[in-house]
Length: 488
Image (cartoon, rainbow, N blue to C red):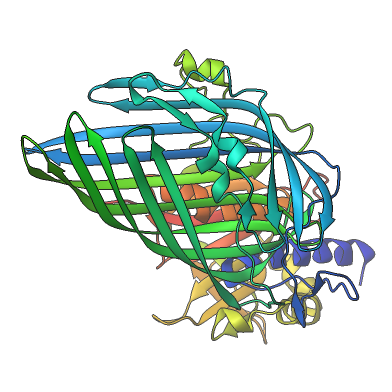
């Protein structure tokens, strides 16, 4: 076997495994023994243990759209918040760690029928305080954050305590392997100064879904599903308003388990409920709320992160001036091209998985290295473009699926003995471009960020596939094809 072929196939194998980590929930092959974080085979230990003295900069966005129906008329409240902050961890003391917090930038705008409110953040930007975080993610001693106040005009003044009361994901307290789950409860209190509070209680089920490399960090990918309630009572214009409702949603966290820090978190959800007004005029107002939150570690030298809608985050001053946000195509490939592709015929070796739990690193290593490589010299003369393809397609309505590792051929090609063929029909695809090291993160952003906020939904009847370049390509780029249909 030529060294070049082996090198390229190892690259393809490594990239394919990262991508399948997202699709099939598999884990990386890397095993780290005799370390505080454990190892992947017997269970890793997920604990918040940020490096002592290493300044970590984050950007947090939190948005919601609330719709109410009052006497047959729909009314909307839109809230958009952005905060940049730096954490300077102190040395771990027992099971907790003191964190020095600095607010680097802040912006909040609320638009509603009564008028717009924009936070006056001069007293917030540059403010500092300390709080405590346990290794299992319990926040405490963050009261000083609530003393950092900003003025919302007709909305009164508010503190930052809410933002830091439930900032970090709760951890399981015992070693976990892929597929293991643990429960958590998060309570967030939105303080309406002088008028009351709104309490959100979310009960989550967190699952270790796989491992991915994100911004050069070896990360555990934690998927969360949550349900909960909202309730509160405020006084507005002499009337008492009681709010009740139920909420649900999901989220994804990438946690650098060897460093003990969060690399990224994204969650989204919906709430449905009602407001009962007791006063001169009694009424019941149905309401619904859609909300998203994203918290991301800023990698030095990368500049502003991308918001979930593809726009660059802007400074507080730009927010105040209501400057339109400039949109651009992010470098990580999460802004796709929508195009029609196919038909495509791929011949290669395949593996059937009855569930994602069977999609282990050993299975994919065997598929690419031991089963595909012996056929590569036979497939190269038949290939239409010398590229490599990984095709994932479902079997029936259950969890079973095939993964085919192969090369593209003409549709009338005679299939060599011992190989399989699968055709991808002509369809509409969202096509994402990335490099070998960014495949896993791109898959995560496709399904966790781009797809929920787009005008499309996943066409599950059509296979997804990855297109890897020929081994002669000196600057290899990977294309990820996700079949989509317009949302109805």
